[in-house]
Structure formats: structure tokens, C-alpha cells
Image 1: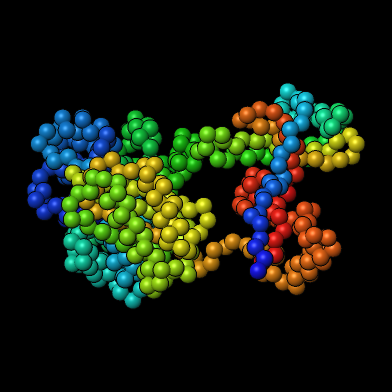
Image 2: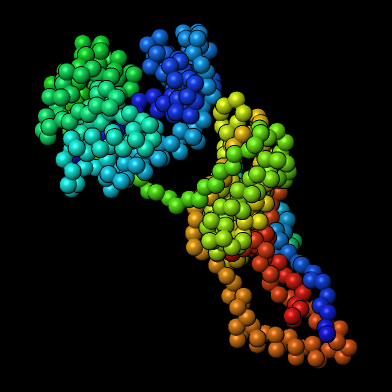
Length: 399
Length: 91
């Protein structure tokens, strides 16, 4: 399968540079306790992702340190995927900053596709990606990785092994332990692994060894799985000044919840659509983000019910710093609640007969004192796993 | 016009405390229903409910559906949070 890999290295750094124009040329470290991402200059100073932040600051004392804003990076990467979907019907997200697109069946030749992808992402989002095109995701990713920003590398069909052969073992998706053992066996390039017999690799490294050997041969049968784009509704609110009190934050979130539901239902207060989950996000003063997912116990169609659940969740886990921007996203949208109604809810013929029978029993009482022995099962929490919570017996009373 | 009285709610399927003896692995061996102690003959099914863990009194129960030696099939559970055995219809 012909696959294009679109790679935007140091995606979090690039995302931060886009929204903070004043940090363009500075060394950047992004992380809290450990480094999430770092600029090229910091990499040159031997900073690595996953390294303790204190250690990284020691290596780059003049770097700007930013708190990670993962929701923002993911949102921006979602826009990258949306853009690529205008060029290919099948797009898969890899790690943040890496996307795969299927090229089979497209009328556009690979080279022109790569040029269009680079131009589109640059024009629309300001990113300068590299593009690799090959048979299979692995060779395509390596081709994108070895290309400089804004460039493309197309591996001709059938020449994947030859392309990979001189490259370092670091490109193989192997654990540090396997890489170390391969190095101890005197291997430095992918081609040297490819020349080993499969049985030897399997004997040494099991199923991982087989996978690595196949990749080194340029064979990658892993299918491209298109992303499933879930319909969501998002509303954002930029606060005029950083909000410190919970009341202000709550008022902002309530407004957004109503706006989201209003967007769902075309402006009516009760939307007619059910929502299973909401995610509340906030950009915090001084950088960083706060995120609160709220899964509703059952799908809700009334924004007031949703707001009640969200408010409780916010009170339990409020943002830790003043809030600059708020965002509410409704996900898990459905057209029906999925809740099964009771057999007698519709007050059908059978229920009318029951009412008539009770009426006759009442009439037989001398003073109309009522009949204690007739009750009505009222559902309380029919979905509950705890039997005594599901229903109760109420006095029978005719409306 | 008839004004209805406020509805009184009676809980359904309320668990009833029972006395029971258990095997070492936790399975009920002997159940006392009324004044009779009846041995468990067969264990059909077992399941757990862990819920309301966020509340001061969480629900943690180990249920068994068992056949007694007198032929009855009953559902019983051991309260893993508060202790004790209970009989409860689980339908």
C-alpha cells in the first residue's frame, strides 16, 4: 500500500511558537516534571524527551520553560489531520505531529501530493512538515524523518530495503535493550539486520525480532487505520481578565454548556440530542492547561442536567491557577437516550384495566378509606446494579 | 376534586440479614433461614458488585446463587464492606 507520512518534528514546540511570536528564536523546554518536547537547539545541548526537567534546565540554563498545554497541541494536530483529509480519504494519526495518508487510488502523483500537503499545512496552519512516501508506514515514516522540513522523499516501489539499509538502527521501533544487544553483536545499520537470517532474529528476540527483521527487509504489512472522526460540539470563551474565583469560572462554563446544547438543537433550550460526556478545559494564567472530563451516568438531553453534573465535578476538582480561557466540548452525541421505557409507562389498555379494578376495590370500602394492599412499582434507578435501588413500591394513587 | 395523599415509598428487594457459615474460600456452606440451618448443595453462580465507592458507605458485595438441600434456589451475598450475610432476590 502506498502511504505518505507527514511529519512535523517538535510539534509542541512549533505549536507554542505559533501562538507566542516573541519566543521564535529562543531555546524552548516544554514539560512539568519531565521534558515533553524541546527545540532543536536544546536537542543539540543533549536534552532528551522524558528527561527530568531539572536536568534539562541544567543543560540549557537559558531556555524558556513552558508548561505543556496538551489540549491545545491535540486540537492543533486535529486541524493538521482535518487538512490532510482534504487530500486523502484515509488519514491515520500517529504520535502527535506524525500522520499517515493512503495514496492508493488517488489521481494525484505522489510527488505532487507531497508538494500539495506541504503547501497546504504551511498556508493554513503555518507548519512546515516533511513528507515521506513509500510502501508501508515504516519506510514512509523513516523517509519523512530523514527529510528536512519542507522537503519530500519518495521511495520507489520495491526499493524500501535498499533505502533503509544504510540507515542507523535508531530508526527501528525496537526497545533500548534490543538496540543495545544488536550493537553488542556489532550491528550499526538496518541493512546489517536485514542480512541476518530470520530464525536467528527470532531466536534472539522472539516476536519483536521477527517484526524488526521484516521492517528491515522493507516489508510492513501494518494496515493504515483511518481515524474515526467523532462528531463533537466545542465552544470557547476568552475571559477579559484571568478568573480567580470559582463563581466566575462556573458562570463561564455554564454559558458554554448552554451554547453547546443550543448549537446541537439549532437554538432551542432543550436540544433533542443526547450527550454522554463533556470535557471542560481551561488555559491557565502563566501557561499550562486544566482539563476535566465529565462522563454522565446516562445520556442527557437537557443542558441544565448536564450543567448540574459538570458543576459538581468542577467543585470537586477546580482549576489550580487563574483561568484565561475556557472551553467546553460535548462528545458522545446520540439521537436517542437509549433508555428503555417501562412496560406500563404508556398507560395502555392493561394499565387501564388495573386502574378500573382498583377503582372497584375502593368503591367496596365503606368510608372510602383507601386500600392499603394496592401499591404501584415506581422505578427509581432501574439501571442500578444494586437491587434495592432499582424500584420502590408506592401507594396506589390515580391521577 | 380529589387530592391524592403524598406517596409513601417502600423499598423493594431490601436485603435481609441471615446467618451463614462459609468455606475457607468464601463460598456459603450453611445458611440459616428462619430457625432452620440448611446446607448448600450447589453453587450455580457468583458475582461481585462494587459501587458507590465515592460515598462514605461504599457497596461491596460478593453474591452467590446457590441451591439448598431442600431444593430451593436462593441468592445470598456477603457484605465485604460492612460484614455479614444477606439474602436478596437478584433479578
